[in-house]
Amino acid sequence: MSGLQLSSITKKFGQVTAVQDIDLNIPNGKFVSFLGPSGCGKTTLLRMIAGLETPTAGEILLDGEDITPIPTHQRNIGMVFQSLALFPHLSVWENITYGLRIRSIDKASRRTKASELLELVRLPDVEDRRVSQLSGGQRQRVAIARALALEPKLFLLDEPLSALDAKLREEMQVELRILQERLGITTIIVTHDQREAMTMSDEVVVMSTARIQQMGSPLEIYRNPATAFVAEFIGTSNLINVKVNNAQEVEAHGERFAVQGIAEGLTAGGDGVLSIRPEEVHVLPESHQGANQLSGRVTFVRDVGASVETFVDCGDITIISLATPKERPDIHIGDQVKVELPSEACVVVRP
Ligand code: ATP
Image 1 (cartoon, rainbow, N blue to C red):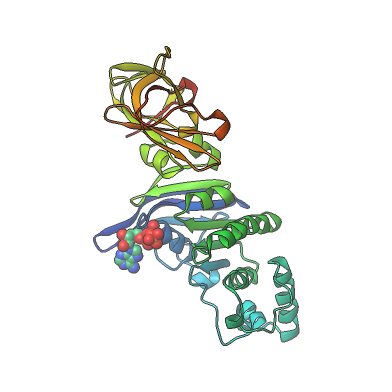
Image 2 (cartoon, rainbow, N blue to C red):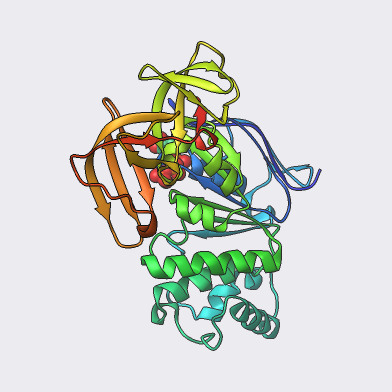
């Protein structure tokens, strides 16, 4: 079978379980993010794929071959870390081709390769500079070029952009994705930034406390989060504790709400969490009659020009509605209103 397969991977450090029984299939050529809060195990998972940690249990297969016992330098993997780990005393081209030198490739070939790679990462004409003479973004490109020098089968990146300022970081995200598509190399990036993961990836693996919560395309996990954790971690969600009546209806605050669907594993009579994105919520005058509504009082309006957020206190829950300036409802702090939660935008997730 082609691609990367993780089968029942567990990693324990003494009493701490960093990764618990993870199964994962990554087809060749995909760009995948490991996304989750600090300490969820994403770096440990990446390090096991790289061969920098040995799993306590489970197997890692690359194109059908069990690479679990194979040391890092024999895995044909390119890596970029947050620290970059470039050699400051070497020139750019020597940094990029360091791995080739160790493999006794001659100097002329190494120089040609360095030029090609610098062209690829859009950083020509700096071959002979020292790394210490480059900007943060340029160093990033050198680290990427170096990781790609040995034409690896897998490209692994651990928070590679976190040291860059916001604007450069967004540019590099787009560039990295374009580069990956051109090369068609299977790429895994570790990040705790959901926007970064969603910008770049074919598939996002959302993790919390050593386990995978959900894997899917950015749009899938945004529209159909499987758990309350995913709904909160990916963007902003309004979350309401509910009782499940059936696959199309739940109950909360003494009201019934029609919903688009319920997550796998939820059953009638059980607890669930209704999740709806702020941009789907409508704020209406109090007199408005209709289904899927809650009454409340406006407690705050945040108008930042491009969007308007309205906070409505509906008893024990605050519902947030997000509108464009054109759709801005004529409301003010203190107004009694109705919030409408359209059924087609309501999904019910596991608590
Ligand atoms: P971060 O975003 O902060 O890097 P992470 O999601 O990458 O977090 P890991 O670094 O994989 O998380 O760590 C997962 C858990 O394993 C944490 O509880 C961490 O303290 C623990 N851990 C990681 N490496 C070691 C180690 N070498 N020895 C002991 N515990 C470790």
